[in-house]
Length: 268
Ligand SMILES: *[C@@H]1O[C@H](CO)[C@@H](O)[C@H](O)[C@H]1NC(C)=O
Ligand SMILES: *[C@@H]1O[C@H](CO)[C@@H](O)[C@H](O)[C@H]1NC(C)=O
Image 1 (tube, rainbow, N blue to C red):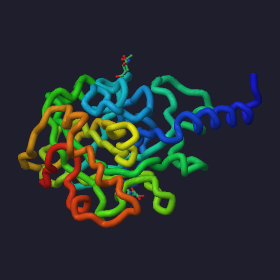
Image 2 (tube, helix red, strand yellow):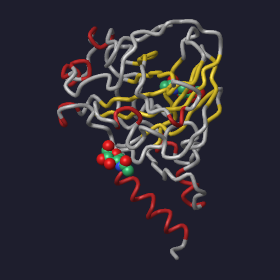
Image 3 (cartoon, rainbow, N blue to C red):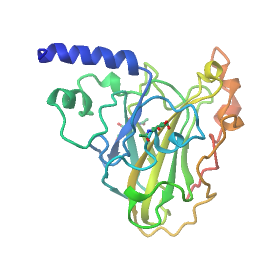
């Protein structure tokens, strides 16, 4: 057996090489409490960017149309904020106990190498909710109706608010659930898009994750529009913004006022 320090560095090198531009959001952050990996977020089999934005993996990530193992539902009051913590470390999707070395690297959000927990690209973010037919989120495949409740773009019309800028790295993206959201069990989907590679790949890179949430409160709002997944097509003009490739960056009203890809935001 390899000495553990050696194993650790071999593992670390492999990960940095293969995953440095890939990330996901396996952690929730509610009231300052960071969850365990995949505690409330549907495990994805890999963090590779989703290129087929209208394919099944565009909803909750690869092989996450249903959870690979049952996960917990997190309670959150309508009107409050939920965060999604990023990491490039995929770890395993097994629910069985793990090797302590792997646990140290993969499982601790407050890792000694926090850089690895930033988003590696810059782009817009959005959050959606879909009410499950009953209380069983582990059995809900997201084929019902969805509404979009938050969208984060480039408030200065120039640089995306959420991204991996070296001077302002983002580790957690936050979304506020509208106070009038009706209570119930929901699949809460977040997405982050990498727009800057659009010219290379002829599309965008999508990084989605879905959490199981129970929204509490006495909300009686009527969220709209209600849409089915997929929310956009691959060549959708709302996610194909060649204008963003302009260099150097300069403020643009189109970007400042951009409502994001997909349906309109329900403000509550
Ligand atoms: C995982 O997802 C990929 C891409 O969507 C698919 O090709 C593959 O069959 C899936 N594997 C399983 C075990 O579902
Ligand atoms: C999201 O909220 C957390 C606190 O829970 C904060 O540390 C983090 O900076 C916030 N993220 C952004 C992009 O503002």
